[in-house]
Image (cartoon, rainbow over all chains, first blue to last red; front, side, top):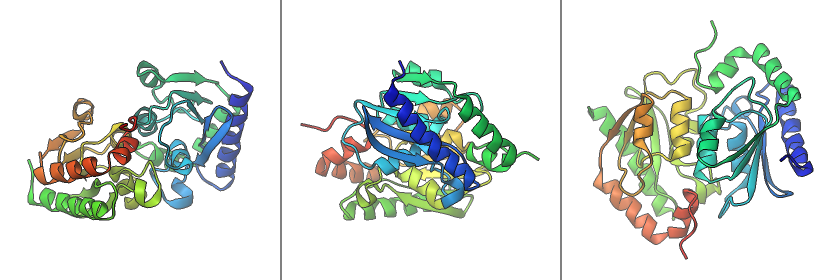
Length: 152
Length: 152
């Protein structure tokens, strides 16, 4: 079930993703929260910092700092998580993930669900459009970010 | 097959892991190389920078910077990779991983091998002793780093 808190936390992530596209960079962002307590936010920093591992979710977890436990947390992400970010969710036993969209990058939400993560997919059209705009404008950066051969 | 270059690259990672323990921190480190060209090194920075996602492999990939392709690279790591670091290896299609030891943390090397990664396990006793010393000295930091409940 999606709550008003969920919508608020996702809107924070979406605003950060939009700001990243405005900066000519990758518009994917995430927030980590425990209930209505925001623990951290982050956006993809491949372009801004030349950091290939700073996917939105990874930057968010970095910015949230050390946690003795992730019990009771929810990770909100504007795009379905890649293998690295899915692995981070499993490593830290983050129990719930809310995903804005899995249309422009499928990820493997079944992999997470099979391992006990509660996954909620919003199918948010605003995020689909944001990523589609980025993918069309910067196809080589996008290929680089997901380990694909660049388009010729 | 383990080559002299492999031994050299792993010794660089081990030296960085040892320096991390000397600093009172987590002694896990990694190097990324393409043949005999060193692309980057990194060590776990949970303690030094309060960064929970800077596992040795992740810090190494960050320090190596943006790569158009990881074709032909080998990742050397002093400890069997966790779910997050395994996911990073798969995301970026790193074709070969050399692991010093999987005794003090098993990880899931079969998961990587099943997905086409060439995995070499050295069973290095120096690294087993390094991690054993750390795990006994700092059990709570270790639990935090791998998302386990802290020992009571």
